[in-house]
Image 1 (cartoon, rainbow, N blue to C red):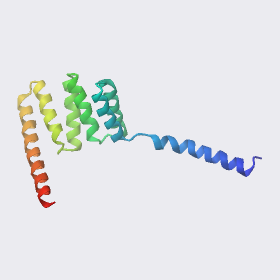
Image 2 (image 1 turned 45 degrees about the vertical axis):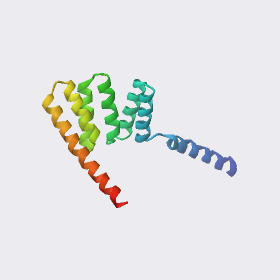
Image 3 (image 1 turned 30 degrees about the vertical axis):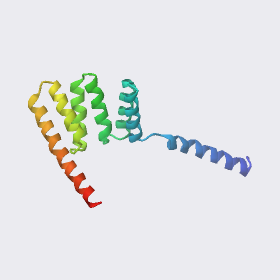
Image 4 (image 1 turned 135 degrees about the horizontal axis):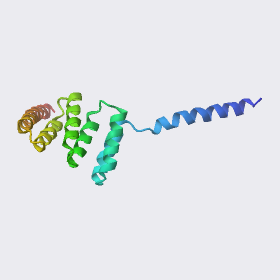
Length: 140
């Protein structure tokens, strides 16, 4: 029979082996930021993989879907970009930049009316956001 000290050490090592991988595991926002960093390096394959991981970690992270849509637009995969931006807006209808990007995507797909509708929504939300920010500055 092992000594209590050896048993304690074995239990401690087993516990650490189970806990440590979870501590270093990235969350959805970490992967999104990694995707942005990869775009800065012009490594679009790695950026796409990071955005996909962000979505896998949290399917309701609008930033992950938005980043993926941007990659698809860059690669002229407009149908995939459209779906990514629609998902972004389903999660967060007030995601101002997603409305603009979806408008651009519709423009590239030749869907001018849809594009103009998204651009109009973008302008309305942006104006509303600017008004709120200006009001907040006044109260400081």
